[in-house]
Length: 125
Image (cartoon, rainbow, N blue to C red; front, top):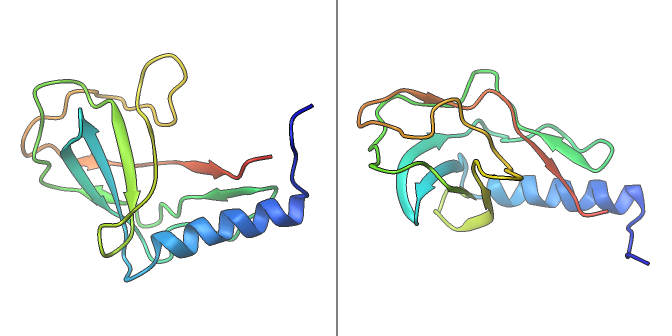
């Protein structure tokens, strides 16, 4: 049987993730190709709304944007959410079979405008 957490605890864990992203705010979302950053999207402060149901939803008003992406030769395959000191808070997978983030355009060219329109973090059940 898998371990489970009470909903109140899941909400607390999710809110702690948001608090970590907001250290020395604003934090950033780094879109990467094999570890090299192709785009840095500055997040709002706070980055996420208060937890509900074990989830925190990214604040996208105004829409977090990178108006001058560095670009990459390959498809973005991973991401990091970092705090204001560039410390990684959590990471995930872009594209592929079970992605954490799906992009409308996987290859980002230098100077592209990159926006994030939605993202939900779910605390472990």
